[in-house]
Image (cartoon, rainbow, N blue to C red; front, top):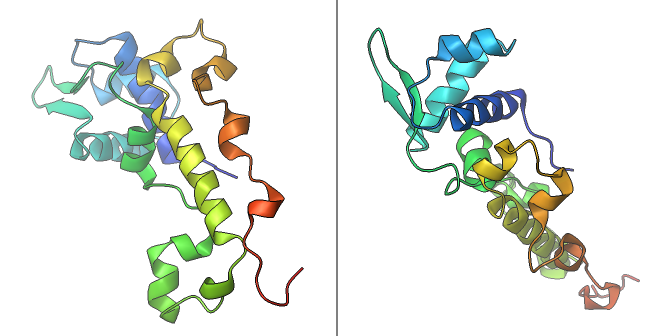
Length: 170
């Protein structure tokens, strides 16, 4: 359902590398030589992360990038937002859908809007709960990244009876 773009994947690779070298200025050339990723997409990702305030850029012969904050303070949600915007689940969540047609024809009776908004919020909370440091920590079990007082199943569970019933629909 949520699929990250290549640009985001390359940005995450670069950020994990910068986390491993935290406190140092690392060139895009070094990152590109270490990981076989397209230089253009890597450069675009680094630029977007710098514009979002997650990276500091240093010019010159010994220039490159460094994290603006501790990797403990940067979240996966911030990174995804910087590289591709907040994810949407339905077409009515995107600005383009409402601008193109003016309004949603079924909004007033839509049985999925509220439950999917809760699902989106739950997924977003999960992304916001994962730090760059925990993502970079190779000793962490990937399923432990999302461990919190709110289990994913509890966040994402939607009771059928909680769905609003549209007139004439069963």
